[in-house]
Image (cartoon, rainbow, N blue to C red):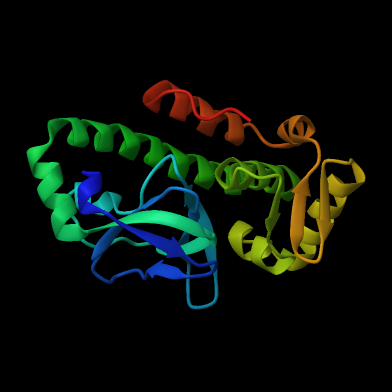
Length: 216
């Protein structure tokens, strides 16, 4: 299947999909990652999922649908493999192993979406921020990555002052460092303790269905 892909570089902030538009290509991040953002109304939206090298963007095509309700924005710049939608459908139709793998990945992805909904409703901002930083670090595969308080507020669906308070609390505990838009995870183990249970639930679902994720 890789023969049908082209290598591309995804830029930070690049929009690879807009809700309601036909999905013309699928993306398989290799050293990049994509945020899936659900619009709530004209002024608000929230991140509901994240796709890195563990997955792909284009699940609706595997379900016989050529549009998706989410906006896909590159959060971590880097390389990816890209395939035309028609070629992906063709590969899916002829390959039972691919259909099997897509079914299992779709289950894990839906679990992540459901976990995000529960997390947003029941957990405090500081724990949700810790979870989000861990998820980002998993996909960035680096301890330092670029993200502003404004962007974090956008991703978590809270006011910027709430993110600032939560990030400051994590800094005071020595779990993260923050300077000019760059976040550094200083104590991953401590950040796991500070995170809500949703981070572990996501990892457990992935490991149970797709096999152990890359440990950090």
